[in-house]
Image 1 (cartoon, rainbow, N blue to C red):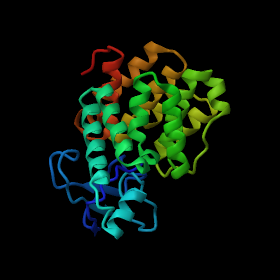
Image 2 (image 1 turned 60 degrees about the vertical axis):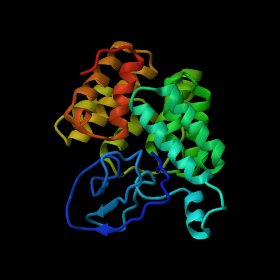
Image 3 (image 1 turned 90 degrees about the vertical axis):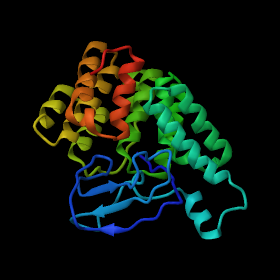
Image 4 (image 1 turned 180 degrees about the horizontal axis):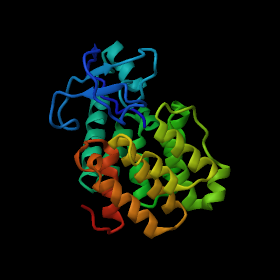
Amino acid sequence: MAATHIFESSLSISTSSFHPSPLKPSPLFSLITQTHSPFLNPSTPRIQIHGNPSLSISRRVVLPSVSGIWDAITGGNNNNNPREAVFAIRRGMLLFRQGDVLGSIAEFDKAIELDPRQKAYLWQRGLSLYYLDRFEEGAEQFRIDVAQNPNDTEESIWCFLCEAQLYGVDGARQRFLEVGRDPRPVMRDTYNMFKDGGDPEKLVATFANGRENEYFYASLYAGLYYESQNKAEEAKRHILAACQSPYGQRSDDYMASLAKVHSLCRNWASA
């Protein structure tokens, strides 16, 4: 997914320790924040890079928006709109985590009104639109995002999920957004399953004994794949498994919150 654009933050590079996280395109990167709430309080994250420093880092971890870079260089445009837009995005993300999907959309749309440049990066808005059954708008949001980042596997998949509801699985596959190779094995296999068709059970089995985050992501996307094919019971089984997994229970990954929101929106009992 794309980066959240908190342009007031600064970055430092460290190679001192290793903390795997799927928020990055590979387990070689970790994000450590200095606050208990990454959405309501500005913080100074430290990005730790381990292994090959030439590997690319996901936009959703490091890169600020174009507007953020420009405002940092020029000192802004003498108004508070870009900063207020960032705060609106943070509020929207927090509301989504709390299960208020409609409220999250109001904040994301407010961010765009305050700073239209943010729209090209608001993958969070696309997720909220999916859960409001606004699939055409959701697909548009993900396509705009992929135009900015042609290597974002998850946004390609979420575009497919929206368009499967509009055109059916075959129609969505004909329109599939092809992106670059994801460094994460679980997301490579997931991408190929959505793009070409495949077996969600095999996906989950492949990563059942892998890292906690790999099992979580395999289960989540297996469930979403079944949902795209209108197989509600299979979707429920796998997404609840993602929620109940150690990673789903403990991680502050936005996608761990999404699995819980998905269960809430479908009126499923969740652990």
